[in-house]
Structures are given as C-alpha cells and as structure tokens.
Length: 199
Image 1 (cartoon, helix red, strand yellow):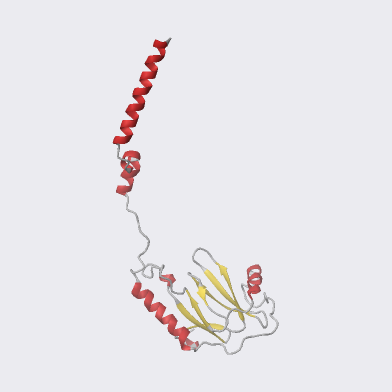
Image 2 (tube, rainbow, N blue to C red; image 1 turned 120 degrees about the vertical axis):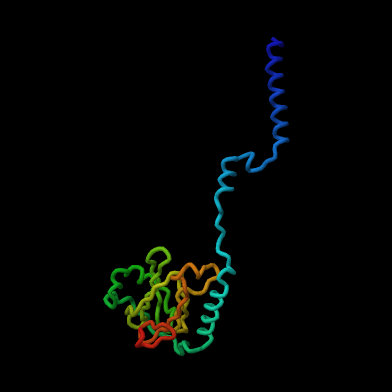
C-alpha cells in the first residue's frame, strides 16, 4: 500500500518543483503571458488625445476675441426685468408647440439672459444644441441659434457666445466647433461684427 502511494507523491513533488522553477525563470512580460495581445499591440498604433498645444494659436485667438467682447461693455443690460414671469406662448413660434414640454421645463430657470429673457437649450442630436430665447414679459419665443459645443451667456448681457473657447477642442479638425459671438437686439440674434442688413 505504501509503495502504491509513493510513486504518485513523488510525481506530484517533481511537478511542483518544475512549476516553481519555471515561474521564477520566466520574465513576466506581456509577451510571456499574452503573446497574441502583445503582437496585436505592436502592430496597431494607438491614437493619443489631441495635444492642447497643437492648435494653441487658434485657441488663443478665439479666447482673446471673446475677452474683448466681454470687456467692451457694449452689451451690458442696464435694467433687469422684475415683473411677473409669463408662461410659454406656444403659438408664438413654429417650433414652440413641438418642444412645448422642454421649453416649459426650461422656463423654470427664470431670467438668465439679457435682462428679461430665458434661454432654453434643446438637444438636436450628437454635438447639436438649439438655444431658444423666450421673452418673460409675454412668453413669446423670439429667436433661436444652434451650436455644436454649447453656449455662454448671462442675465446682465446681450452677448451670446456659441461654442465658447475650449482647450480640448481641435479647431483644425472641427469646423462646426468654432466660437461665434451674437448680440441680441430687437428680439433677434445678430452676429457680432455684422449689421442688421447683413442678417
């Protein structure tokens, strides 16, 4: 009986010793543990995120222009509307009824633009937003503008920037991401630097 157990025990001991020796001798590289994966990684190139310095001059130009707009004082609103906030007039714009729920929900923000307006942003797909301007005195939807990267605006200014400058955007490759400035006057958006006739 002892003789019958001796051989399997000896075989197990030899196998354990061989396994330990192999583990110590092996260098634990990706090639030794996952040779197929290592081969694939060496063949495929890995694309790194856009380097922020790649388009630094374009970014700086947009940033400086934006700062000039803000610092000019040309778009300041002297008086804030303090009256009762009107509900949405869904007959005031062709799209108001279509987006009634989103617009009504957005109006809960109160006045957030140009002294007496509420900007309500509605998504229109990947990298697409439509910004509706609602007059809070009468609830009418007055105008809209579309962006790819959001917008920047404030309650005390008529200035509205779509696609505000962002260091993570590669402006060389994304033409629809370029920042643009608009001024809101007479119930309409006008691109900064143009006249009403250019619109």
